[in-house]
Length: 481
Image 1 (cartoon, rainbow, N blue to C red):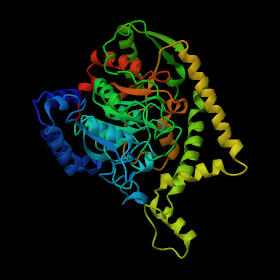
Image 2 (tube, rainbow, N blue to C red):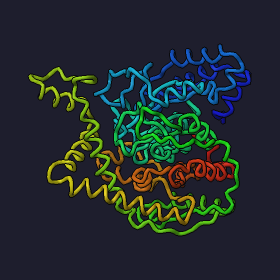
Image 3 (cartoon, rainbow, N blue to C red):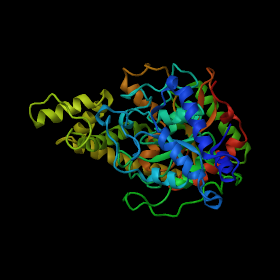
Image 4 (cartoon, helix red, strand yellow):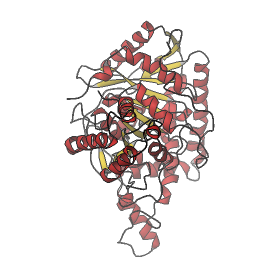
């Protein structure tokens, strides 16, 4: 298994060239992606130009690049001025941003090589990467199954070895859920830890960009690059950024791990439960102490999330009207018809469903009954977690109720699809960091993830616990055939 850390060290030391690493990733994409459907755009020309620039640097300058020559994939809702950003939607099918996202700039400055843009559920709305206007992305562990969503393309890029690292976005579990279903590491940072400048908005109070990697160490290395203040994002905090790699080796003896029975109730598959409980046993062996906690309001999380997220989606997606950019219908007699027809032709079924739900929740006479009440419940959920973190350092749970489901299995049942996020949405509502780390396989040989949640800005501690667990297990070393 070649890691981002190893690639970067080889390029910095002059034992490999950035051009060779870029070509290796591009060849892997060419060989595998026709079947997997992880990429919607491959940036070969840009990647090779980046690589040549790195190789042409003086040796002492190249040594300063923490991701020198490391291939990386970006979810296609992260703006890139050198490539289209479509959000896997017909309405942005021809859109090429005039600027790059903050994280895109940071990656280029760190020497990373952006090899392509990855598939997602349209506008990041979904849990399977089936809701894409581009293609269906397939799970490399079983190509008849979904990889999770909405960042399924980025997860598959890493799981299949096409790139060692990738970026996704997480609004209600869209990094952690596909990381769990494909057997890789995925981290959603604290809200405001990573700039959202250049991230196409879905739920503005929930969205956060984060890393995918095969190892916790690579995830920490990538977070070191993208975390930090950005004046262009008013929600991005200016607090100092930890060195997330430096603290990985600390022992976790004495750490208190919270276990909430609310996460282990009805609906959790036996295969998933077994692997998560085995992971908790391993953490105890490593010196951590498990403590039972209560999160009584957890059962209201899904309802609360799908009111707030859809309301924000309704507001954010109002800008796509066929006027300034994006798809414009040619079948319209006047401007009102043009707005309506452009949105009808441009948006897919799931996006339309969420716009309608959100518009209804925000409408006159229903705002107080639905949206305002959901915001009050959000505050109570956050308070629940604050009370829990007064007693424990980390909360552990499953990431998803079950392992990867068959393509098409839940397409006709939106509620069943929404319930795939039942364990992940609380972290987004509270704005706290959370991550998925591989913890085993079920009876069908499909990956299972362990979720770790911590207080705001505790990414260093979460990564430390996850790394200590990972170096004493070998789940992450198994790769799909």
